[in-house]
Amino acid sequence: MPAPPKLAPDEAKRKIALFLDEGIVEPSFHCRQESMRKRHVSMLDVVNTLTTGEIIKEPEWDETYQNWKYRVEGVDTEGDELTAVTIIFDVNLTLFIVTVF
Image 1 (tube, rainbow, N blue to C red):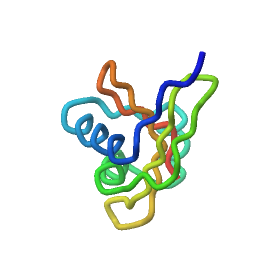
Image 2: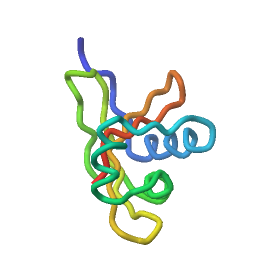
Image 3: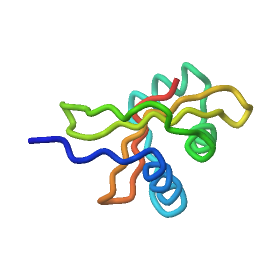
Image 4: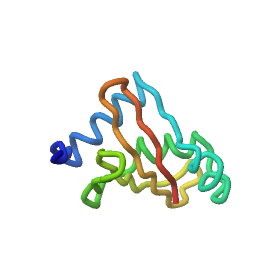
């Protein structure tokens, strides 16, 4: 099955902003138990990155899960650099956070 079209960076950012206001932000088990703990990152840090960050790199297609992963590069609440790899699920207005670094 061919990949669905990817979102342009500005469209992805618009959806991320909308989902932050009206949807769900859900970290993956790996993100919550490993990458967030390792970096001492809270959900407030993740939300700050998603709110203020930019999508600079092209999204990556995940063949296994059949979705686009968007890399939002920004800063946490203390101003330290933070990147959140995010999947946008339109069906249930969910931002699924794959990992942070």
